[in-house]
Image (cartoon, rainbow, N blue to C red; front, top):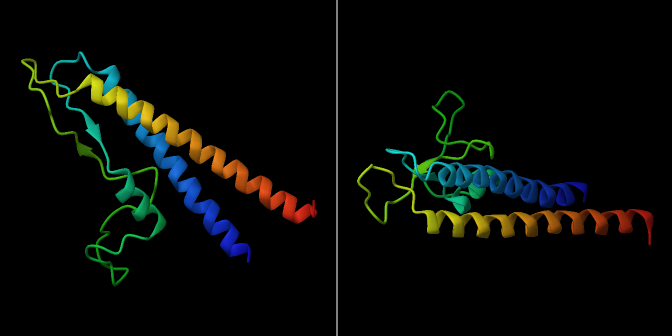
Length: 132
């Protein structure tokens, strides 16, 4: 019973950590919008969350502890990728400021909703424990 409750909170805490990490990456992209040669970075949130939660069944699996690690299950270290450049620039900067701002706001809203979901779960558990 307790494992089910903590598993739900673990999933949400991993999502919160990944949202925070993505927010930092997007903020870095926005901050470097005028830096010549800067290449925007991002990561696939859904894939990173599946990796962190152990739900990613696609791809090769590590069958022995002596094998090389095939990915990171640490939500603070998702697999980073370069963002696809939509408008080429003369200085080599690949930041699309409109896209980065939209992604930043979307991620901020999702971060807030994840935080509210965690708070709601904790309040529900506390009311169940205290019997109110």
